[in-house]
Length: 443
Image 1 (cartoon, rainbow, N blue to C red):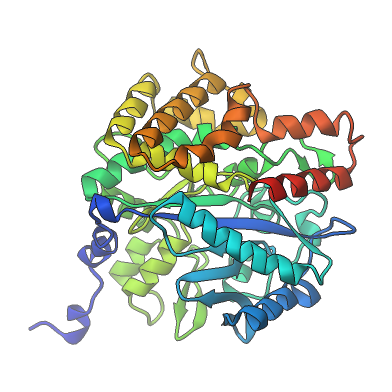
Image 2: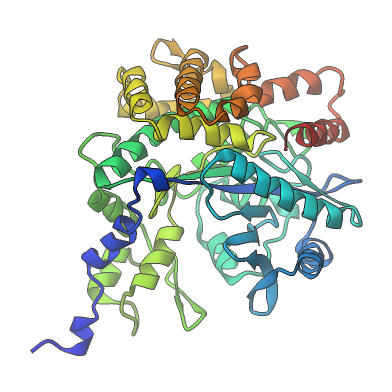
């Protein structure tokens, strides 16, 4: 006889449905974005705190635009309107996340509209939302975690010498893309993992941190390399035998940080992984599908599988739509995927792993085997542009700002460093002014 408890026991087949429910027809494919920025003082350039700063910004925006609060223990930690959200990352980074759209033009239109609304509120404050990958002046020791239970627990748990930097100081751009079936999802997942180090190099935009040159062109990427390797990095072996089942296994073998029961966090602190939790429970709790969703959201690989593919490791910059355009050109065109697979065929897992560790310092000047990352990045751009032109949607125009840099062997950090050690005389005020001017031109 099957008991009610056994009948309701979480099975792997239940988890698998979270991913297979994402299957879409090609004509229904859309593009999503998560776009973080750094709140800094317009006068001192230091990070703005939650209390008396970013919280007031959210409250005023909600009042002006009729958005609803997202709260945690009565503290405002974000806003929502339909499928669109404005949320806060651990160090008060402001993230826009919008309903996926069919074209990049539609994404751009919504982001422009939201930025215009936010700017109207910012005009009455001393806050600038900076499009940059790491806090330019304040360091994590001077940036408080926002009052959100999840982040407080994560801050105590996550290990790695730069985990505090990652949580409190950095801002990035994530792209989200659809798939038709498991075969299509895994193929795109593997391609995305292989492309990410080249994209990290192309969009490297965080060489100045704490008011000084760091020696790295993307200090943000470096911080992720030094954050909790149990749940960060590459989630697969980048071979054709990968599957949903293997991804789920990777998630489930990572240690559980906490559970959320009746809206109360229950600390686990890595005492068990999710497989053990499913088998044996924890205290008096049995594993549920909501537990798995939370656990999977606390798993942070460069490319994350959900009911879509989330590609994560890009510094925030003034070129969010260029990032989307490159991935759309490649992942939404089967011929382009073949071209990318051929381009990257000479390199194995170890080559890509080594590349991830070298890119933060040297960006496009990094080498993979005997080849320059700069040269391969140009080929990636060419393949994406050719594909977008074939789609006849005019979205190749979003590549223009990154083409101007990449075709000259440069990333945003190269321009910053040239000016930092030249005309700017190592002044943070001039870096901020430069970044604000770029934003006004491109967004």
